Image (spheres, rainbow, N blue to C red):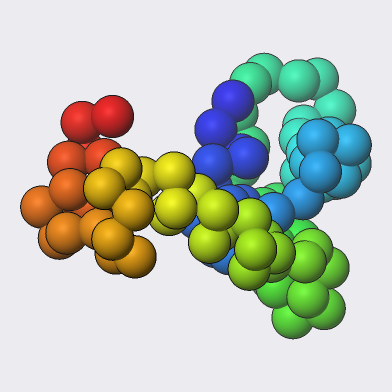
Length: 88
């Protein structure tokens, strides 16, 4: 269930279709909802080495921070960032 979060935490941002393809490579023949590390590591290593998925575009990331900058001052405080990442 959490493979998308794991892959994204490694800096990869696949589309939903690409994520389903990746899941098909690492999932057991009889889907259990779990992925074994022994199957995941070689597939994910290849994905990372081949740079198979593009990182999130800079303008999208910048827009996300602009949305969080409620006062339109060009930055967000450390306290606000911590709040957004832990509470929101």
